[in-house]
Amino acid sequence: MLQLKHVNKFYGDHHVLKDISLTIEDGEKVVIIGPSGSGKSTLIRCMNGLETITDGLILIDDIDITKKNAPIQKVRQKVAMVFQNFNLYAHKTILENLTLAPIKIKGISKKEAEKTGMEYLERVGLADKANAYPAQLSGGQQQRVAISRVLNMHPEVILFDEPTSALDPEMIQEVLEVMIDLSSNNMTMVVVTHEMGFARTVADKIIFMDDGSIVETGTPEHFFTNTQNKRAQDFLSKIIHH
Ligand SMILES: Nc1ncnc2c1ncn2[C@@H]1O[C@H](COP(=O)(O)OP(=O)(O)OP(=O)(O)O)[C@@H](O)[C@H]1O
Ligand SMILES: [Mg+2]
Image (tube, rainbow, N blue to C red; front, side, top):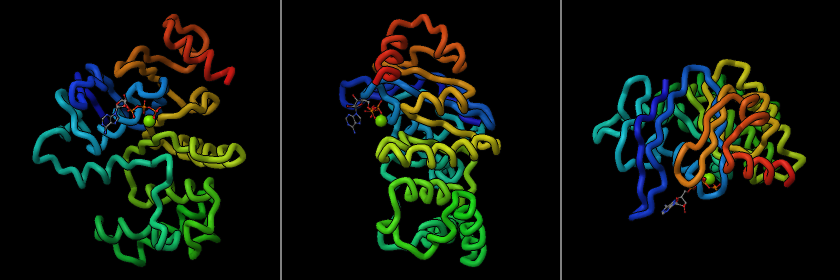
């Protein structure tokens, strides 16, 4: 599904991604963890062409998205992103937030986009908010809307960049539950998060990054119980006793 081969990225002379290679299979759930500044956001932003890379290859279904004339619009339909700060359109209703892109970018009829939009709102428990505006919703509700908006584009992969870290503690769980529900539906997911409980239950694979490199890759079981890597151990001890 998604393959990175020897990806490097520099900001000026700052080497922020160092020879990253990884493969994400169809339906796989990958959780990326690591200290602040290690390159997690940069890495997932490269996966849907939001960032350009300095060298290497990024293949999505065998299309190299780093080529100059890559169909980037198509790529973003396949590989969608959920951000920390929801990024909803403030002056559109919740349902309009869900239907805008499918109508404009995918050419789906308004009627059809609204029908599937309502189904996804139902799924995240917010059908009754269809006509509300984002500011009338809590942070947790807005993030659930952002997830249903992405679903209404029918992506093949969803990238999440710290989807719960802007939320008050009591709202984190409701968003994680939506993500857990998605994970049981065969969606391919790449999630940057500090929620270790989520990582443990949902991840097929955990990737630990430090200073622009993938330092360790393994199952949650391996990672949480017997990582030998010093930097990973340090990170875990800080985050778990945090
Ligand atoms: N637009 C940019 N211009 C220059 N440097 C950048 C830019 N974006 C990120 N960086 C640098 O690249 C490195 C990786 O940043 P990135 O945001 O990917 O880290 P992160 O692991 O997501 O951190 P956090 O956990 O704080 O979100 C950092 O040193 C950062 O300062
Ligand atoms: Mg980040």
